[in-house]
Image (cartoon, rainbow, N blue to C red; front, side):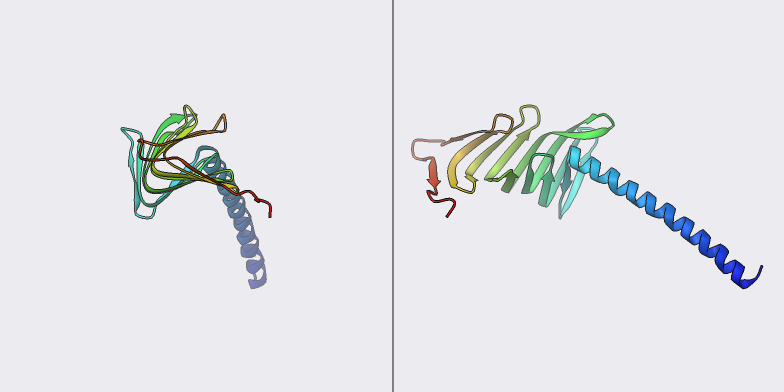
Length: 172
């Protein structure tokens, strides 16, 4: 073979290989994005420990948990899961310290939180607040029913109070 023919042959082989690689990468991105968006994911700065026997993940250090409804951050998290249709589905997630949970246009904060997929609820305790575009609510305990779009804010004792600050001119 001449040098020119070899160059064309290897060039075609290279293009064929690059096309296959491009298709593989697209399929991989599609699969990963489908799985992460539908079931949820966990990210953590200091690490994630997987306990397959108890079906839990324990994450520490700037933890981020996200599923199709909430985007939550905390210092530590323990997530229980079940295996369903060959994937892991988070059923109960506990959050510890510096908790910030985003749901639609609201931000929930507290010292401890428990997310339950079964009742589709979030329960927060300790220095709880709800921030929305027009109000700020504070208390000791918050129960959020995600399905029924209700919020129940409580105080723990006679000495503590539940506060609501409402902005009258939200649009101006």
